[in-house]
Image 1 (cartoon, rainbow, N blue to C red):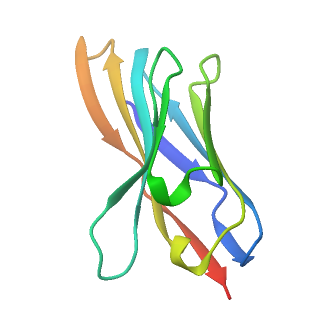
Image 2: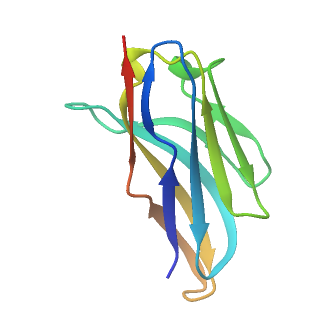
Length: 121
């Protein structure tokens, strides 16, 4: 079994910072893409940032310059450093990964359980 576990969400004032973590564990051979998505109440889930095995990165326009995605391949962990947070950043943040597992010998797509980020004005 392979799973993703997020941590680091919480309550922060506008202008503040938070760091989210997503740790992958289990029968992992390799991790191709990893990404952060978010979903606010009444809205569709949207891509926030993604990072690929070659460390190339991509961000939603709404977070460019404020958020930084990174990964530690030795720890199978991805991070999202969020700065200059705004009330509109408030959402449940989900971790996503495409993982090649030894148990299935194929790539599978995984989601974490989500972590709440609340930004007070």
